[in-house]
Length: 143
Image 1 (cartoon, helix red, strand yellow):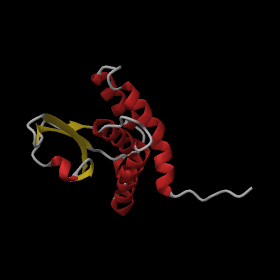
Image 2: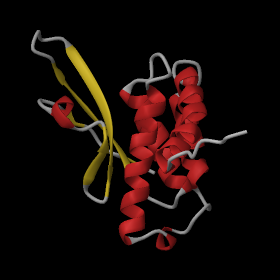
Image 3: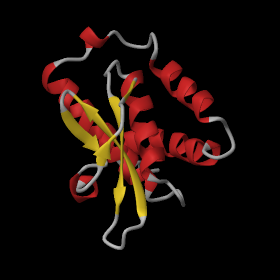
């Protein structure tokens, strides 16, 4: 039997898929504070932040963001909030602190819109780009 080599991104996406799926299912069924606490507990006490630094830290952050994006394509309804929660949970397990940020605004037609993204080390990890245009930021959610 021939086994295919799996890339690091593929492994991260494989880890992210069940998490994205569970988070997607939990939103709307579980109190947000309960979900928030569960995400925070995933990362508590796993790896000391000092254990992950420099280039390895940056690669880990980028791999998590790519893996969650990749996994999210296979979960219907994986919103920006689901992706942000998954990224924050997976970074926490790796000892990397991040913040989920929320913003609200109006689209071109005047309809209300909201968006969630994750920032780490002063940069947007997931959920950035044009989606941030015209949003008023709300208080961050550290994790």
